[in-house]
Length: 186
Image (cartoon, rainbow, N blue to C red; front, side, top):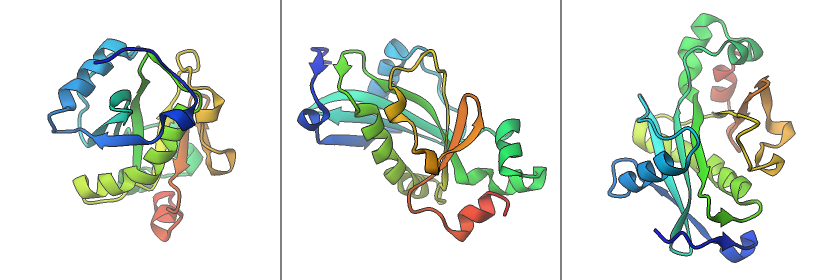
């Protein structure tokens, strides 16, 4: 891997290519980059999950992984207003971001939010192709002291539903359907 520093404005780096790598020849590259460079390392996810390498100018610049949402998260469930039965019925409509890594030699302002925007538009389709159901909400857990993506990478306030001090659930663009209302227990 070429680790030459990539320092430039986003418009000089684009376009990015988001590659789904689960069960492909590039999955070991994803795993090794996460293990070596993510502050939490790499653990093989259990259950439904997708892994992505993000490329620009022929080099990987980021890695991202999504998994099925945790079954029990009291703050989320209380905020949404889910009963135990509603949660069991609807948890499948949520995916959460288990890992997001901008590689350490990449310093491109706004790259994190650019990638998150692309993923928010793409993930549901990839999930449906792999698992036979769409995703209507994205969930993320944030360690405020560990991220250097900055406030620009966070979801827009009008689309963000705060769950707890370090967690948020965001509906996907164009996914405000009756199924999404059902997922919210309404």
